[in-house]
Image 1 (cartoon, rainbow, N blue to C red):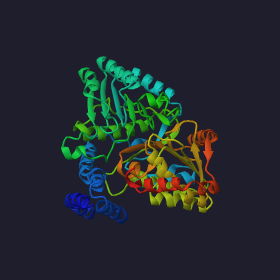
Image 2 (image 1 turned 45 degrees about the vertical axis):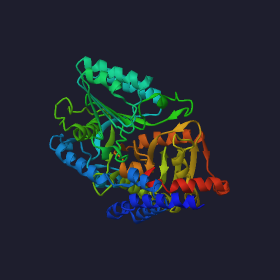
Image 3 (image 1 turned 180 degrees about the horizontal axis):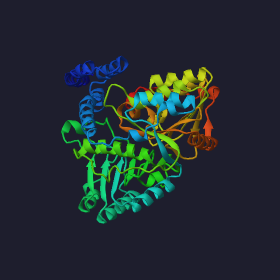
Image 4 (image 1 turned 90 degrees about the vertical axis):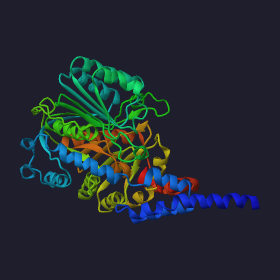
Length: 479
């Protein structure tokens, strides 16, 4: 026994010697909440090696330094991005009073504004979505811009890569931006044929230094395709076999994507241009990058961005304000549900004041810990009157929200802290009853393939499930 303590005590001493200085980092972070700070300090004290390692990977705030760099690039990019005010929808000109309220709400948190004259197509079948993206790529004459969080070097990813190579050889200017964490399987061997064909390839977070390679925050979770500045795609779907339902472990892939035509496409192009400038310092000022848009339809739409480049988190604030503004009904579909405390309170409060709140959540996930963490919130939501359904037909990956049948948001952010506070995200807000109605119809169809969560049965679940959920919830801020 003496020999055991002779090993353990020196090991603990070395562990504390290495990790106790990390507490200084915890206390010096101005943006860290008191609850988060206490949690990290306890982890470092109780688990000197493992807790310290977790903090180095997830807790050290490299966000501020990168935030400053991104904010600088945004200001620089603003010098050359085109002025789109001629397509701006003015709140005072909107006939419906409730839509005027939401126009003002979104404008308060965004640097973009609603535009008129857009055509917005909702895409719910991933194979059709990929087919339309390929069709648009084949039609490109001047520019092709793609930004993705995950791009797999499998059959689907390789086939689309080869299409881009062919268009580059035809003289189309192709720019490809990928996230180094989400697309970590992309090798030099995979990318070299693209570069040899003249495609400009860049990574959103290059990780040029050893310290940056440790950072797993500030991911570009965006999925953007813009063709000739006239047609745009964004939504939840990445590029890979699994997103077409070809992964037998994940099964059918249920996602929601958008095809845009009209002035809103230039806002999507602006998001790409800002990210491209951040990654490469290249200013996209060419006329073929921002051509005069056509008025393709009658939908009022606004591209909104979520990024940690200022104290205000626009995407989180928009969702919080929209939920609080609801008067009749809320439908939310999300693949990862780990809400922040303000969003949890907003949902529960909306239900208690008579708003019908329905959540369509994933019944299975590629990351079981996020599924368990999300389930830890079910009981309080159910007690407040929120309806919860878990999708069982396959893997739910949609990220959609509708409010009162006239305001909708579709895009890349999940309903969790990482998406809304740390990631770079993009979404499209529409002020259109037809789009909202279509989303609600899709919600109903998905609900029929889902399992309702009932309060009495839920609180009677096994204790081991509750314990697993509670443990995973501890890591909610970084999931």
